[in-house]
Structures are given as C-alpha cells and as structure tokens.
Length: 175
Image 1 (cartoon, helix red, strand yellow):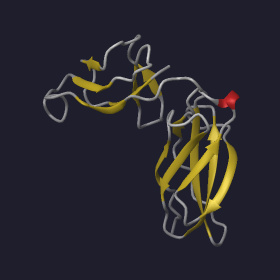
Image 2 (spheres, helix red, strand yellow):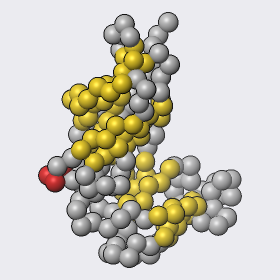
Image 3 (cartoon, helix red, strand yellow):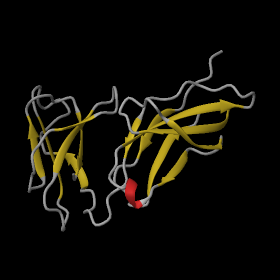
Image 4 (tube, helix red, strand yellow):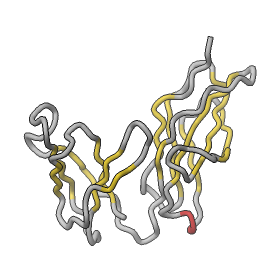
C-alpha cells in the first residue's frame, strides 16, 4: 500500500513580518513530516527546512528582514515509522509581509448577487478597506500550480469586477 502525502497544504500570505505559517492535514501513519521551501513556483530546487513530529499539522518558518516580501513555495512530505517517505505535496505559496506594509484587507467576499451560480461570465468581490493602504492589487490563484497572476493595476476602492473567468479563486493583497 502506498503512503499518502499530506493534503491541503497552505502557507500564510502576509499575516506576519516575522514568519510564514505552513499548515496541512495529517496523514494516517505519519511519524513525522518534512517541510521544504523553494523560490520557484513549481517547487523545484526546494531545500529541506525542518522535520516535525507526526502529531503536528502546523509549522512556522521564521524569516529574516531580508526575506520579507519574497515569494516562497512550500512542500510537505510524510514519513512513517519505518522511514518510508510519501511523495511531496504540490507547492503552497506564502510570504511574510514587509515591515511597514499595510495589513491584508479583511472580510474579502463575493459581492451581493455575484458568483455561486448567479453569472456564467463574471465575478464581483469586495473587501473592507485598510486605513493605511495606498492601493489594492487583485490576484488570481491557480490551484493547479500555486501560481498567482495579478489581474489589476492599482485599485483605490474595496471592490473589483472580473468578466473574464468566473470560476477562478481570488486573493486580495498589496504589492
């Protein structure tokens, strides 16, 4: 029987200036997990950062001031008590906020009557404005390869409408 890789690996995006938090769903039979980091969106050339006990499903990658704002891609592998290692997961995108940058907007949501079957060709999203933000940038996240595509120039209000691809996920953040 094959040993399963962890599922739903996520890395925080700008939640802290000091660390990036990596989370995953535990794998049955895992005695430990290995965490890898790459600067390449496809996860190539990843370096092993840590091994953690199998009862954990979270790990924080402490970053230096020089690493703030750098895009990192994290992969996790499970290891059982016999030393068998699962395949590594797909890379999960994360970054530490640059000191002094505004917080990530809160309450990001679909605008009224948008998405969830209300349209076949558009999506509208809105968010709570951040007091010290000069502008907002909207990105499209790909669940296939963890890549981000910037969709907008500088937006100065808490609303965005996209009429190109309604089924894509969106991430709001500053750049």
